Length: 327
Image (cartoon, rainbow, N blue to C red; front, side):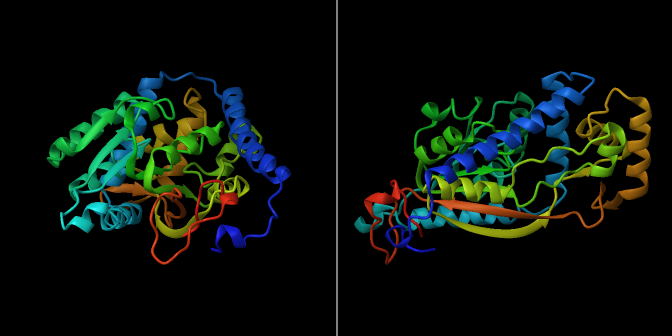
């Protein structure tokens, strides 16, 4: 990517408004559709408990920490290599990591297992319970600090960290600008934000149309994130990779429950029977779980660095760069 002082002034105020407004509109329209079509009102704690158990089982079945974890670890090593204490000959401590929206620890626990200290921000008790249990099993509880709060409200309780990560969290965040600004404010070296490239869904669109007579409103994707960051004058590195989707199920009962919830038909027995029929005909066994064939998804990572972060062989950014540098 070009240096900030080499970028022509093609990003005007109207694009800033459009990018931010588009993001907020997409999230709002999806939320309004869900509120309009949802018949039942599940207990929030029970809802997050089911989601936590489903995601936990899906990720643990992989036996692989995943590409995003590998990139976070690489960012930690990069942060350590720039630690000023190297100049004195003293070995710097392991990099500190802040995981915002950590869930049950899909990133935090593997990163802690590799020796790094991790602060997790996660407001849902069911997710935190699973995270603590997994950290205890792997004997890394002493390297993980839990802040049971929502972001960005928790920003004042965490302080700056070498590496900040936010993996698959932004999709339902309508007021996304202060959310991202708070991520940046907590970053010393690198901030990695991951999202799916497209608004892929675990429940098929044809079933949603069959049950509700309309198209499901999409979620924002990685392209929307890149447009928003660029419109705000934030310089970042964008990379992509393919991975297995985390949508898998322990058995047909779990598949029916999770998919019916996603399709907003939990309280409709006829629709649930149709969901179960679809799952039984479509899902295939893999690693002891049920998955959809060809369940690969494309993921994008936007990596940002504050202007104070050192870079090798690159001159400082201009004043017009809004305090950010490309790298």
